[in-house]
Image 1 (cartoon, rainbow, N blue to C red):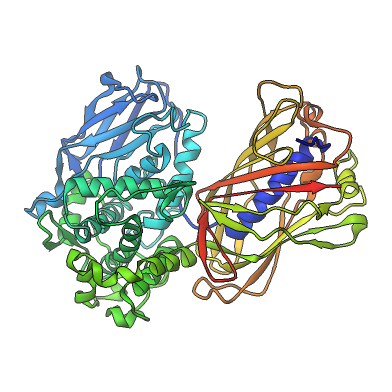
Image 2 (image 1 turned 135 degrees about the horizontal axis):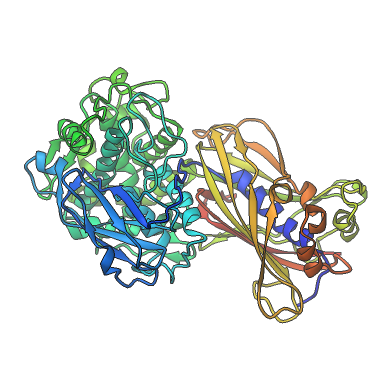
Length: 638
């Protein structure tokens, strides 16, 4: 592989620039944020909620998946529990089984009750709630490795970040207002696992938990049986699917198989999102949610949810009248609506009997009683009707991906270089998406200016007469929401992903908070980045950290407008590398700079950028849309 000459920050900057450019263009919705504090005793408390689950047994698994028997516990009559983790090896996972779901008990009916899961990342985490949300988060993090967090790459150093990122993903896709309060406000940093459930959010969280489970029960019914096994397997499959940030039928580059014979994973996705629309419509009406029992019958659950909430906290507010959607929930509504309309072959909400969209200004009381075409709602949970809509499943999923993700037009992606401070547009080979990976590569005959990069790499880069390259692309869609994107960027010598002896390698990881109102995307600078790197002669990796000033000097400009409901309206975005091409030494990390510096920037480079906590997709010239969670490619500098 050909050697290259960029110093550390040039190398890191190339990765960060490309990564951040795509993050800006496609970073999206969510709403999670960790809330943890130091704990010297190793004691962790939580609440078990689907409806509140009393007398449930809790097993704790060590990081390697073995049982930490001394920490076993159970939820009490208020669905609360406490765990002593003194002899456990962190991070640990939790499994709740059995017990009594108070909502379901109040309805005097038998419901499927699969085991629920949760996580404790480190000794600083003092809260670990167990719920349908934590169950999806667990499966999205462990990625098919059973209880073995070590095999899944989860450690005490990255567990908290993983929980935060995946909570954001889950709340965006299937939040059902879990981050709302009964007074009409919402919690921007809410995390289903680590946040405390108090008087103002316990009822809304209980309702949202029931709504998530009810959505899965309706999918199970459409698949043939509302059984505990089917519901549990669907939770696992959907969690694994969301591990890469997008509900696209894959876990990174691995395709997920449906857990239910005769009901494809494509059907699981389409029916989950479509049923979510009708569940949301019920929740945000004064009539309230109906739930499906094991026989397939439905019962009104609003009164039971209110009563069950007081089981946990007698002081909790149980009125939902003032509850209002936030941008996370309206984003979920829009995605679910587009999917349901396409699956059912309808063109508008009125065709579904639904009177109005959910908006951030309309409370539950103002929407009034439930309005819906009950026949169409029932059809989405009817196994005998699945064949009727089978031809629409693919388009329904495409509709969901298009409307719920930050969507890039593949034909718009270019790189603008500035040799001698003169703009020069560089066109990559035709970008493509395969197995969740977007490939953007410059052909060998199209090169980046070595002299320009040399000036940017100099120790006097702040005053050098040079302009950083800019990665340009066009967004077809900007959904509403907020969250934290996990970004890992890797850059190394040569033209492939394998580091050979004598080659340099750098990988930077950081979290990037963002918000979007549907037309404007706002990023908050990453506070720091952790780095793993090899100098050319190294046989083992070294680690370093980069400050906010080293990773946060990025700027975005745009023209035009974008509307999440109109993919034809486009926004042009530019990502500038700016100060990220300064050397590491000017940012206070001379050791890293010295380890990576070379005499010339000329050479070949391979880069990859992986994302979590955001939903990304790309659309080609034939209007084919594919989700992706990483970007990779090569470029040459001369």
